[in-house]
Length: 263
Image (cartoon, rainbow, N blue to C red; front, side, top):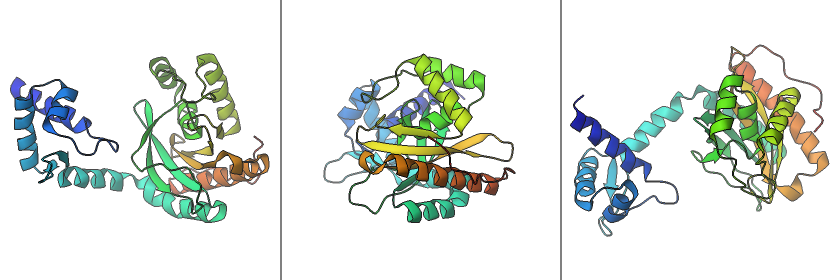
């Protein structure tokens, strides 16, 4: 591929990366500032991307947002995640039993991404969007995905990610986090009490494929006051059994646990 075409692709990808749930619509000048290019260059690229249906343009504000082709690609990607289809009935059962928010997370680079979610019917609940990216060192699902990585890969990620304090309960000391991850591996579950959101709690368990590799984390989350010691023990039993059933659906041969985990 000629260097000019490679440069155009790189710039187009940089423009697409500017958009987020918080910034779903942006003008030419704002995008130009984000990618460090002139407004005229960005304007030409935006026009081409609009013509290719990668972007749409608001006729009133002239601002741009992601277009139908990107959404179609997202649909192809999410439909390829076989785990979503296999896990959905189990998530629905867990949601019905607990009345809390149920999520499915996968690892993507050095972050976790929510790929499936059923929100709690309760008025007070924790809210996460499908597609939302979160750090690995804060939250039950992140600790599950970190804990069960191959040692070399896990060590590399731990060395590369900044252990930023998101709340006063976030683990920011690497040694302390490593001890926590070792406990997660021994127990087969993770608990988070206010690590990512001050007033939210969660419990999570690993989902394995036919080879035994952990491919996702199943999570129950809700307001901290509802996560009493008794409820945590109950939720841990439910989430580990549910994760084991999904793992079986993915080809993993181990039987679901019958015993209640002890936090």
